Image (cartoon, rainbow, N blue to C red; front, side, top):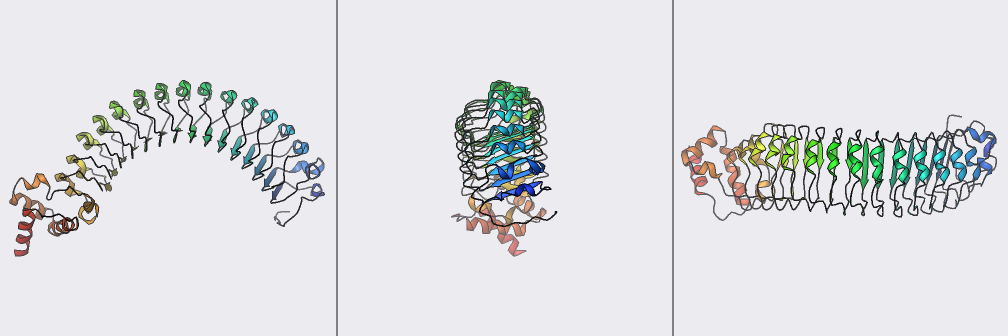
Length: 452
């Protein structure tokens, strides 16, 4: 039968096994699940997919579960009283996907888990009472994806984790008492993505991290106690994305970082203790995105920053201690986005800011210490049609470089670049910014234009 039929039942029927062609069984919001009848042998062995959702009275699954030899997907969600999985689970020789979601009373998984030699994906989410994973986990030689999320009492990952030779994706999130990863992590030679986020007790990463030669993405965000990264980080030759959002104890990055020649994303937003970047940062030739927003302790950027010829996005918003930008920024010829908003100690902008050929987005709002804009700034498209000037409370009009050359130069610049209307816009903006006195040069120029 190709169509599905849905109805409300108090319990799963005793004669369910008579559906001889049944391949998919979804049980939702059923108070009582027969302990064995509906899952017993006979024709039920044909079932390939079993979903158990919100079976609130389900305390355990029957041992006959192991007789579903054709089962390839077992999804159990919201069974809040489920305390254990039967040992017979290890007999599910065809099982490739096992998902345990919001089973808040589940305290452990059976040792027989390791017998699931066909298992490709193991997803455990919101099992708040789970305290450990069996060492037999390492026997899952076909496993490619392991996700353990929001398991608040899980104290550690099994030491046998390094035996998962086929593992390509490891995601551990919100397991707040896990103190670290196994030291032998580097043996996972096929691992491509490693996420270890919101793990509050993580204070270090294993030195073997550098042996993950296939790793392309590493995300260690929101690790409040992580104070350093291993020098072996530089050995991750395939790494393209390094994400370290809100690692509040991280004060510096290893010098070996510059060896990551494939790195395209370096995301450091919210690393509030970070004081500097490696001086040789410019060696990251493939880097396209650098996000340092809210790195409030960074006072300056390395001079080699301008060598990042592939960089398209530079985000420095709310770097409150940043006082200046290097003149070498002129080398960022591919830059499209430059964010400097709320850099309150930034006193000046380099001359190159208005000359980036690809720049399409510029944020200098609330840079309240900037007093003058560089000459090149006025080449930026539609510059005066933005409201950012209103927030530059220390800005002096007109640009100092122009004003110093006298009225003829100032007037010639505006006319040559078709700026008469924009000049008036500038005056209006200055008035909106509540400047006490408009610069005399602008008054003179406005009168000249009105007289022509």
